[in-house]
Length: 114
Length: 111
Image (tube, rainbow over all chains, first blue to last red; front, side, top):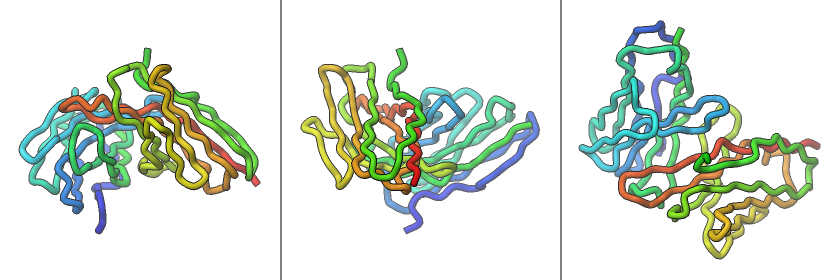
């Protein structure tokens, strides 16, 4: 099992450009999450999907959209990138929601917005 | 008050030392508690869950004090490979919520 995979690993964007971060899991997990991690800020939840067909905002959703394409895939889209979105983005999944179960993280996408 | 607070460190210890990390959380409704480990430029990985009665996994011992809203992690006989950032994580177990991460405590073990 690959676990949680993310593409791309690195990306440089210019302000105003758009891009989609892809995430897939092969553990048959129901819940998936997108976090960003900034120096001195810790991990912050952007969006999550408790189950296929549902998505909800987390702590810092502004400037992002998500799509739960199917049970395996959960994508994060930046419509008009801003320098403040420079960060490391982690996707995670868990068997259930509610936070009682272990979350498994992907390797991250490092994004630089110029 | 931040939801989950940790001393950022760094904690610099020699191999073989015992080191303890502390964490406080603000929401008394929190129900689930974890320690995650994150190596430099890598993803977080679950180190251990924290149970009310305290629990041990090899050299690692986790304690929970609900009255004081305080979680601890004790590492005995530190190894070079223990060098990492340790994240204290809590969850409210309410529908539609996810994990709340502390900013992490950095440990550096030297020979």
